[in-house]
Image (cartoon, rainbow, N blue to C red; front, side, top):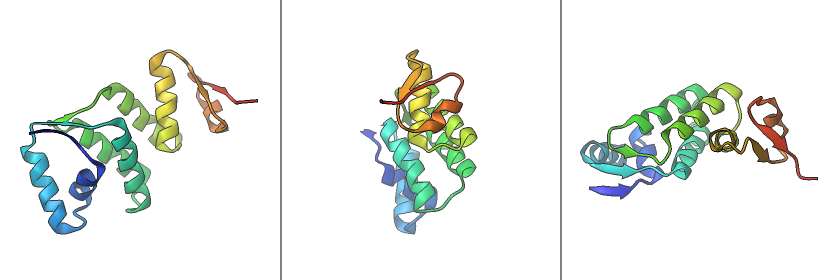
Amino acid sequence: MKAVLDTNVLVRHLTADPPEQGRRATAFLARAEELLLPDLVVAELVYALESAYELERPRVAELARAVIAFPAIVVLDETLLLRSLELYERERLDFVTSYLAASAERSGVGAVASFYRSLESFPSVRLIEPA
């Protein structure tokens, strides 16, 4: 089967919460042919694992990388997602800000318009603060 994958299937698979849905999600992922994983779903997965399940940042990044590497998973830009996870884990920024910084790097734009000053610490990204 081919489908766009929702966050809740991944959360159930990774946490087995609730157990019955966890088993079903794991079985579904094991037999899937091709599942498109939108970047937005990765962001939501990171948020859910951090907030609802209170997992530590390195574990969240590890699980997200494992999901991206799953044989049936297809992402639009694996390099961008992996760089986002690297920045998220290393720089201790929220995932969306890490994704924006990685997008600025990857696209060649090199700048992010934001009020989030922690972006100033990235040598490869220029912060443009709206005046």
